[in-house]
Length: 124
Image 1: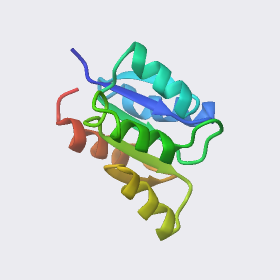
Image 2: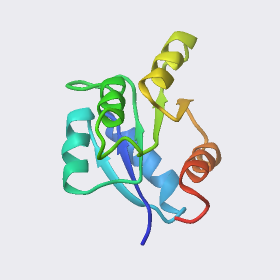
Image 3: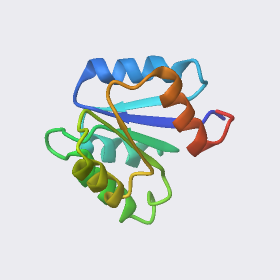
Image 4: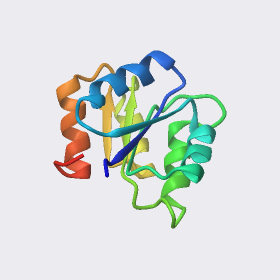
């Protein structure tokens, strides 16, 4: 069974682009437009990894990551923060919230795929 990746971003273009980047890697791809929608999605269908933006309405990526890491059902799901925020302070906030990786947009297909593979193993 393919490993699943939940892509969380309020920008539909970004969700589509990240999906395109990972589609060829064999992952089962899920999408949500913000942190609240991501939690609803995870309650219906668990994911093996979450890629989230930092700045989103309703629930941002930091709050989503803290929520996942604070819930025994989700605490072992690795989170990649994928954001336009380049400041060291923002990076530190993302990692302190529990993100396993902090990547800045734009990210290359090869770099994103490598990070996902490093967290999920080489087989989708």
